[in-house]
Length: 351
Image 1 (tube, rainbow, N blue to C red):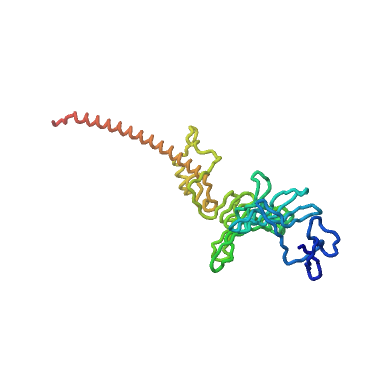
Image 2: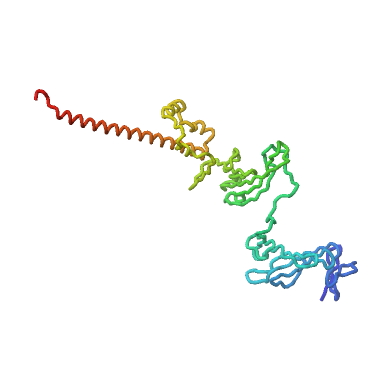
């Protein structure tokens, strides 16, 4: 038995009828439709019942005009044990009513969401072409200048992605955060140009205010760990580091020139006088300089190697001197033996 649905001031009135249903005061019906509404309607629930196979089925069609299907609300995948299948899906259709695809699916069994993918493997699964140029996600909106009245190099705004942690006394707290932070790189109180820093924050979980910035990648590519002031270096670390291997690539003249024939090796007397006057080696920074400015690891290795090579030359000279002294000593010993032999051959006049 078909029904007729009348829209009244009190809502919908359903009456039995033997003909197709239509709204009161509506003179025409949608072709091939059993139920028509022109205008707004209110109901506690609409029921659409239709079997769903693996390729899906549309339960509600959204049209832009007569016979112009644009969107379909329905279900995808055949139902099976374990609450499988029957997944809510939004289908898209082209200008000629041709099927374009299942654009959004929500799995009935656990609420996973697939964008362009009917069988999502995560809470949010996006079907993207690895060779495509469409970004997976964009955050923010064009034309949003943020707060432009901030000092130069201050933040004008930003976007946060938060991750929850947990503690028994304060269970509602953020344990980690990734922030894209806009930076005024133009002028004081006139942020007409805004760079973007990427900020990583973590928390020890004791209290909700424990979350603090731990690392920042600045708009110019400089990285600060434990500090926001990189002082112009590509990597600035406030604290100690440990590594199994560190390679420093140098572009300076490595001090093999010390072994060239024309190298003027300072005399030890000159080095001694310099040490007495300055309390450190020539070309090596003083303790006060290191405390103030630090050291360049590559440059310091170059300078230390130079001193080692100079020391090697001093040792070679010392060896030559020692060899000459040994030779002179052997000659003296030989002469002394000859003198002893000659003396032993002489007899005393009393004898």
